[in-house]
Image 1: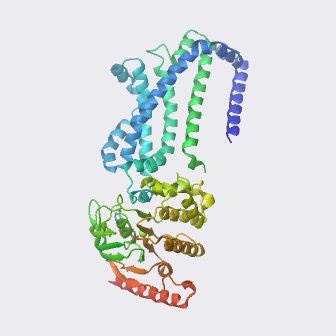
Image 2 (image 1 turned 135 degrees about the horizontal axis):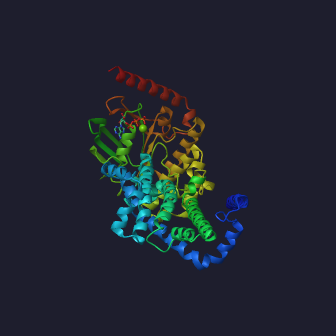
Image 3 (image 1 turned 90 degrees about the horizontal axis):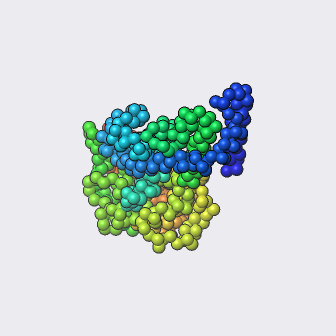
Length: 247
Length: 254
Ligand SMILES: Nc1ncnc2c1ncn2[C@@H]1O[C@H](COP(=O)(O)OP(=O)(O)OP(=O)(O)O)[C@@H](O)[C@H]1O
Ligand SMILES: [Mg+2]
């Protein structure tokens, strides 16, 4: 099973590279260099220049994600499990949820500066709403009967949380993170183009301004690998934590 | 021992109050069984939930072994209509759930659990998830869960309704065997007169509209050998059915 999946990833990578190669030969312009050259260049400069940028991007994503889970998960649980709280929290969430978070960037930068904090907070904002709504809906969908055997045994809230609320909302929670993360990465790219000297966004835009297409493409490849690593990590976590769903 | 005096339950919504059951009086002696039978919507599940401590606001008293019902103090084995197994836990974890919540590691004896699972014919299924089981197997797991706890009382809401006729009789026999060994006071809800006669020492017939008990019938056949083959069993179930029909028809006409 695992082998087969990796095989498909490999196949997809080969096909994409082939397409890229063919296009580069056809167009024959420096703006689309051959993948062979890019990979050579990448091998040369990855440890020297790119690694530090990818670590910066990874840290911003990680910090924003962690913060979003730390806030969104409890909020979602409370809103899902106690309908009274949902009644006055739901309007707040629904009024703020549809605002494109990128529109808040100027405000964030005024409040938190152009440095790390506003970038991390931006990612936090993008992910947290999805988490709140997914966890809340996951918990609301639990039929009452599921709780009965636990209540009739005198279960504490802690028991209810670990036996029912957490496992029941986990699949939706993970899906929400997966969806939000894609948006978060693209917004991160944008925010990294100013106010910092580090991050994949900075690296790629900087290479572009220096008209160094080989480095620019190396950066893009690294960024897509970064995404691949994040998404497969989430898949792995899901497979292990939501065993029962794959039966 | 379970004793219920003057029990009433009202469901309150924003606009009105609905009386689901009222003025219920019942006693089940230590180690006895009671079948509850009644038309749909008459409050059978409500009665069971109240005894299980799932309805915090009721009038009257419910006492288990002399103390007011309290899920934290007593051990109540409650089996809801759809078995109440957690889909994200394996069979063995579902069975252990009660002991985990009750913090009763002394009950977690491997050998005892294994024996119970063998008696119920689910010994090889411990690592599976509930969705990978047939209805009858889920039923057995639910039984294992409540019996493993050695509860003070056992409450079952239409435990065997979802099973086909043959599996149902098989499960009734399995239940009876376990019950005889453990001797736990039991109340169960059923739609089947035959089931009530086979498993109930006494049978409480709820009335159709007023939410109280119409009457309680003693069951002289209970515990006899192979009573399902007995002509008296047929006779008695027929008589019971007819009288229940008459009661309920009267209620509808009123
Ligand atoms: N949570 C609730 N809020 C309001 N009314 C309820 C609630 N639960 C049940 N009722 C009402 O109380 C009455 C009794 O319901 P209950 O579930 O006890 O019936 P029942 O005898 O178990 O029926 P069935 O045989 O169909 O399972 C019904 O009229 C039902 O509509
Ligand atoms: Mg019912």
